Image (cartoon, rainbow, N blue to C red; front, top):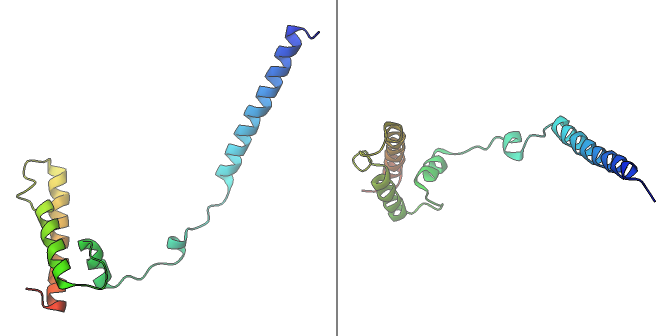
Length: 115
């Protein structure tokens, strides 16, 4: 029959082996060279219309009524008068977003004759 000290010794050896394997595998995963993702490898060329459509959240093909509806809904959400009770940082972010929305809507107004 094995003594307790022998069982304890083998338990320590097994745990050290398992723990050492975990540490080595962790370090090995950190040392792997990072491969660039597809998005980083090939820069995406986005047209002005696609960029403004993304800002408004409108899918292509562009439909003027959807552009108008999206602009009004988003402007109601980010309009400075609607967020007057929130903190200053959010007000600045919302003001920037409102400017981007206005630029996008002006672009589609010129291009599609939206009134």
